[in-house]
Length: 255
Image (cartoon, rainbow, N blue to C red; front, side, top):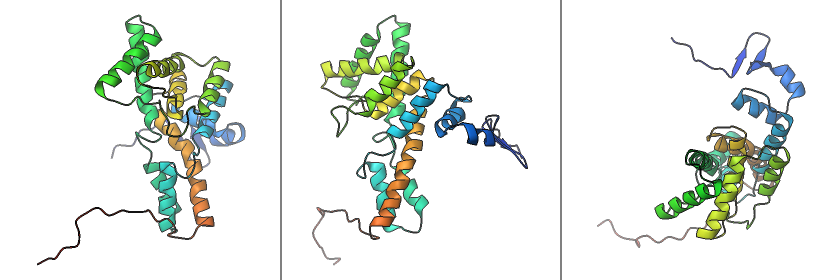
């Protein structure tokens, strides 16, 4: 049988290596953000990159019990006390294009916009305006913009500020800011959300599009474990009752 191939981890009777680094050395000298960066980029981050990774993981950890991932995790914990993993997994499965997963689509939009700017020798602002016009014409939402709660997501200026201070804010951040401005002029004010901020910063750090969703999942699992633990510790089993209004056919006979 052909062996599986991997360049991520290896081990023998007394050692474990992650991307060639001894696990004991990583445990003593690296942070979890270092490890995430190493796993996905095959190198350890520089200090400013580490700061950004730490900030992004913190930014996505939790947004309240009503967020779809947290609500799903607590609902399963309410009905199934026997499997903590099932509750956490339910929360992860609630992450997708509409919740937490828009970072991947936003990174693809940024990559296309930046490439268009370079290929056609146009400004980032003009490329962003084209992206907005195309979305309006197709009736599509713009990933990375808009928030149900915040008129300004408080996490965005922190991430962009850290990236700017470190000299790591590049075309990704510039394009997303231009996209926000273009949407304001063409549609309505749509603030950059955390998915968009992650996408812009990760693009400037050289990550591929799927990292936008991967990082959100990794950071959110920390919050999900706390939500599940609180549900089990503070609430009775089966306490979550979802109001249902029936609007189907009235009672009828089989005859």
